[in-house]
Length: 273
Image (tube, rainbow, N blue to C red; front, side, top):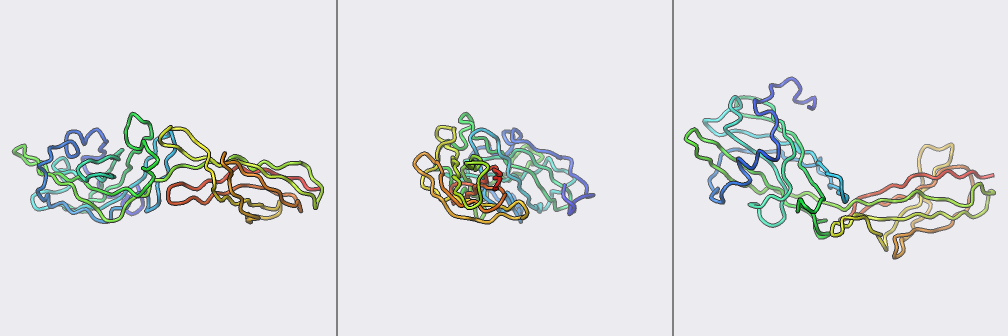
């Protein structure tokens, strides 16, 4: 709960899980073109940043939004309405990345503030991301529903502007420096390897032809400085030489691109004598 809504009354429908949608919006019949009158505003997913996904761990990007209710509905009766964001690629009627958990807080009788997370599972059984082409910008949708007293459900699926970039997770091995220790002014060799998630094989594979920065922080310094950029070979391997001048730490840094996340390696200390 953030400071902006702390102390406000939480609605009775405190937490909704992905399974709840099976009974309400996302698995409903396609005849859902009616306007619910629910207004969703200020929807932000993952703080507007790209979502980086690997090969096994479930990733849960955050979201927040505000909603305003139509006449005849209020926050005292939260089971009578539903509003849940999702991500999709093909059709707004086919949500592919759905809700994990959500909590809504009463702002007034007609307004609520909601926050929660989506769930992205790279396991192939989930059929969410099973191709490297899924590393792209996904569209945003919101599923809305009103549950009337006579059992009728009024539903709609809204598209939202913008999108969410999904990127493949990258990894760098430790910047291994040899020889150690080394005489001042002599050359040292620094090696490493860059890999990234392959969503087709669900394993990490070499990332060839990528520019990676070799950085150094002197023992007495607080920040790293880039010494040079090195391009990975066909096996994703990195190898270069630099002149040793002082004790300190080497590391590799990959700054990512539109399909791949950033990565920073572990550090290797060098003793210069």
